[in-house]
Every structure is written in C-alpha cells, then in structure tokens.
Amino acid sequence: MSPTVANSEAAILSRTIRPEQGDLSADAAKSLLSLSLPDSDQRRAQDLSAKASDGVLTQPEELELDNYRAVGRLLELMKSKARLSLQKAQVA
Image (cartoon, rainbow, N blue to C red; front, side):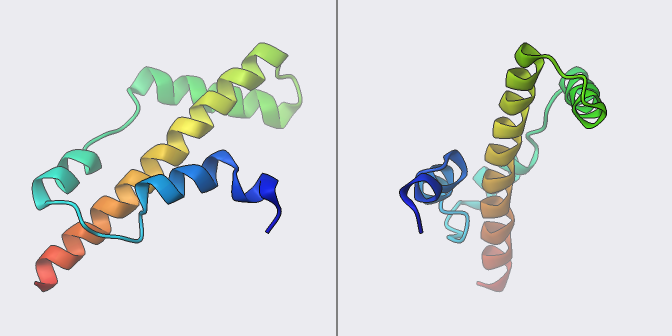
C-alpha cells in the first residue's frame, strides 16, 4: 500500500475510530446512530453533487462538497462501529 493511500483521510479515520471493533456501550451506540446532517445541509450537499455531475462546480463549491464528503465518511465510520456494538450487545 502506498504511503498516500495508507495516510488518506479515510484510512486515518478508520484507524482512529476502528469501526470493526464493536466496543461501544449500547447508549453510546444509539447516540451515534441518531446523528445526521440537518436537512439544510443534506439539500446543500445534494445540490453540490448535482452541480458536480453537470460539470459546473466552482472551486469553492468543490471544497465545500469535499467537506460534506469528509463529514459523511466520518458519520459512516462512527455508525458502522455503533451498529456492530449493538449487534455484539444483543449476542452477549
């Protein structure tokens, strides 16, 4: 694996959050699963994605969309860990 891939934002977040370890309490997991972008941010991210698909995204908008993507990745990792934690709690 190249150093660039090994130290990408997604890779660093994954190593930090360790979504494959379901070691959260049930309460913590449920709290994480309740997190989501506000409707206004979801609409903005969708608008920016549509502009990107159309090829009309400005450079500042591209940076903004990258920010939404980064937050989305973080939420995905946290929620993955939360779901696994709840599954393990049900088995135990």
